[in-house]
Image (cartoon, rainbow, N blue to C red):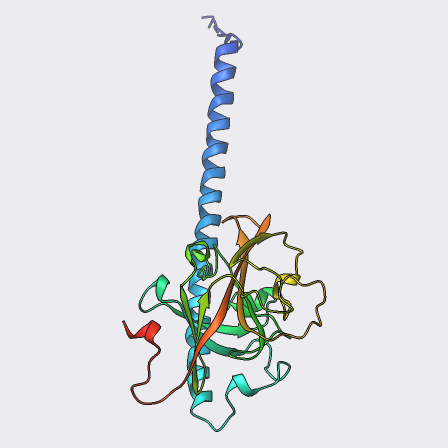
Length: 252
């Protein structure tokens, strides 16, 4: 008995089938890229915030322990006597919320700004004559300066040190001798370092200051480092800490 084998031949896939296969591949690739991007955004906005929150808690405990000791208030120190990476003062901005506060770290290197807003080494310390300059993230690591553009003239900014409350008020810098007209808010190039000079925006970085200023710097716009947003404030009140003593800006 003879067995006959019948072979079937598949017709080569047509152009439509090839296009559908390609479309499925592209779709799967886009889904994968979307998941990767979401994971990255989650890391940038959530995980970095958790890291900073833990560092802030640690710095605040260290600062409170230090304040209970016999050390001198930071406002009486020389600018080069504060260890890099250490807690400097507690920043409170009522406009950001009744309980909003962050420890300012000494230093503006990447590792410092991961912990919180960082004080530019060499600039004035809280309450001192000169320019107390601070940098902070705007979109990651708890984004302390996320709403820096919401701070308008009259806004109060409070610094708490071991023995003092220093209240700064956002405003255009007074037109006093030696100071140019400096608006409360500036948008500048990232390479413009003159905004943090003792006398902001002066070409001479060694110009002798007479005002007690605070300057914030952060990236601008949000999610970009193309520019830098700068905010200036002037010291308007200094109160010695004591039982029941609270700056009016925090009393409400």
